[in-house]
Amino acid sequence: MNEEAERKDHLVRQITETHAHFSELMAERLLEVGTHELEIYLSVLGKLVDKLETREMTMRETAQDMFAEVVPIVIAELAL
Image 1 (cartoon, rainbow, N blue to C red):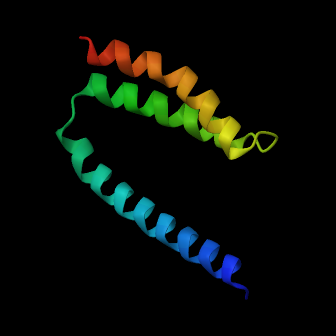
Image 2: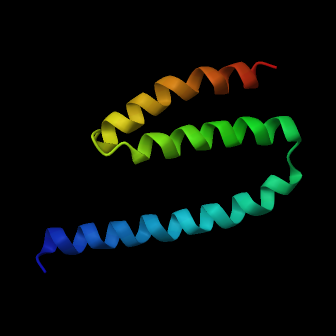
């Protein structure tokens, strides 16, 4: 395996581990959140999953599309 492939593999492992840790922490913290916030979070998370399932878009395009759709929702909720 060349240096670039090793670096990429290392980064993928780190991201996977960090994501697993994030999921564990979120599972704990979600118990502290009200129903309205849970509904918002589920909506945003569902939109992200839908975007990720669209393989025709690059990850960059997926992120751009996702942020364009979700940022107004987050800002509106934070303003309450």
